[in-house]
Image: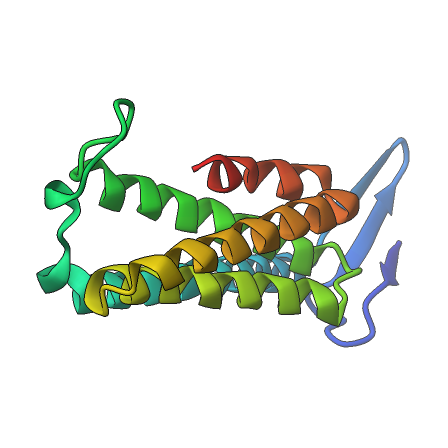
Length: 171
């Protein structure tokens, strides 16, 4: 007995029932389309912070004076920053992708995400390129507040998405 269970593509999507076994042949195209949709969601969510972060890195690279600054005793070496920021941007993107996939994203979720990302990306320009040290100090306080708001907001929607932001908040 063959029963059509898909209206859009009845040739591909059907159910075959035979006693005592019921074998369901799933619409592989639908699964593939859903998987591609998930992949596009996460790829775009990860690509945006990575590409923007790389652009800001290239823009400020020639004016980076990190090694000439006075450092506290536990400050990381300069070579660690691109590695850590790459990881943080990936975690940020995965977390935001998870929020978008929950089916309950609100405009305020995207607003806080892109607002903190914009503030984050402008900080090295203010600090390294323009040498506005005092302004950058207050700007980073604003960034810290925005990141904490984002962590709590994401955590309330999806626990894992919120926890993925913790390394960013700590850094």
